[in-house]
Length: 396
Ligand code: FEO
Image 1 (cartoon, helix red, strand yellow):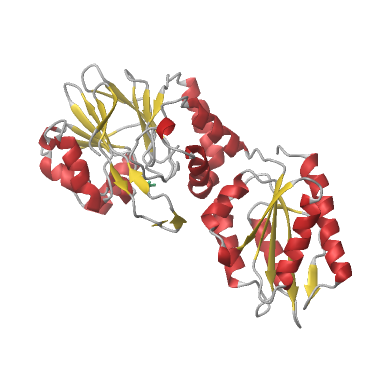
Image 2 (image 1 turned 60 degrees about the horizontal axis):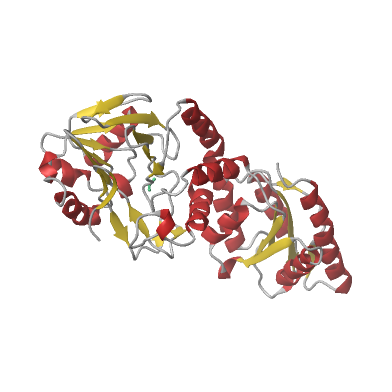
């Protein structure tokens, strides 16, 4: 795969990582891409780079268009190494290039690479004229690092928003209308990376709307480029950031000898008997990246654990720690579980689940050794009553 022209004089010159399966804890069964863009006019700008060991791929693609030594500006929208990792290589070749970044981007790049490069620091609204093409910058602090910014190519109505609107997909095609299940991967990406920043995302989208930037293409840093109705992904971000939920429940648990699983399945039965969508995940057999995607549009999140050493099972504890960091919005939930001679897990799950921001429901679902027939009926009844609460208020 060589260069790809997005717009007249704007090229994708990134790299496809077919084999990455774990992106600092995020499982990536479809791989990913590191998207860099070359904007060519009287001056030449490279917008972001790629992971260090893909530098050669990127430089080869740039060389099909211009000599890399002729790059005038290296725009660094974000310091994280999957985007800045080849900047040293580029700056070594492009001896007259200036690095363009936010003040915090400059500080981060200097700390990472110790490069004594000429910097141009930019704020929202600042512009760099390449010729007919003008690059405009929008600071986006904490979307998703303090240094982050978007670059907008005004003439081409092209937004290059770095990590926002991305998906972890490796593909031989570059556009959303050429690849399957893009929105599903975008939801997973949002849930696992951007969900904690939902209020900032809503504010930033409003700000961009007031700037009246016409956008007919969005080139994120990972995955495919949104060219068919790019407003679809903006609308999805608004919906996800508002915490809009479906009538859907998740039952997430682990089990030692099967008792907590019996409770989980009885609750599931009570929910699905009422016609509400529900999904069951046993943590040691499930991918937590995928579970977080499912949480994104679920109204209810129930978490169960057996008691181990007076506390939660380690897989449940690890999952709740991960979920707490991602701060899902507008969920209701409950804890359940089993114990032998001493309780502990359900209280611990309840406390931790509450800290994730879930509104806890009253529930008496903790049973010794193996739940009996009446206790199983109580779980089914809980599931049934839960559907009433899910239906009461789907939108937070
Ligand atoms: Fe794709 Fe924040 O790095």
